Image (cartoon, rainbow, N blue to C red; front, side, top):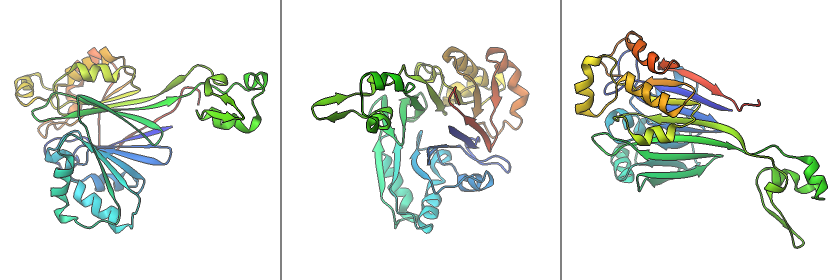
Length: 303
């Protein structure tokens, strides 16, 4: 099971009832935060989600509305006597940018592990999921992310018995471990059926439509995508500042064959996103206007 919470869906500046960009996901006892705009801590508290299990924070890019909440969050983690390492992932310059922000949080009781993205795409494996960063098209270096939880095939006890595999190895093989015992090698494919459908979430903001978003979002259970503007008259501004329209996000969702689309990262001038939803829904019916605190529980098919 994967829990998803859109903590904030605002872009550029916070509003009285809209926090800046942040997404929090929980899986198997760990949490991953993507972007950390101003007000992220308050948004977490309002949603009753904890910062304590956060072990990975990713950044799409280093504009203030995506990273300005980090120093305060680090201080809160430190004041809670955290000692576990915290992994930060982001575009090149990550350690330099975070180091500058840490002028107000210089001493922390936990280590920070920096992982800079070095190419157009890069994949990280941790905590039981795969995280892929992919370059998008903004006016600074910017990345989207896809989180994928793979699911192995069903364990076939009859096949294990037929091959006389000792019972004590069954659980280890089911977890994907290769076992050597007295010159005999047992591999997971000896007892597991075909891989089953896993879970997949794709997140992309601050960009024009790109092939990289479409390709990486294919088959996602949820696509969270920028919808900076809904009014078609704002299209020239979207082009100029490299942002996206509602209908462009909907077209990506349709092309990628996702299950559902959440729009996010609204312009401060876009007070009522639902007013502009009809055009996007004509393209992709399951287009949903994101709201602060929106949550979703994703389960494996057979659960």
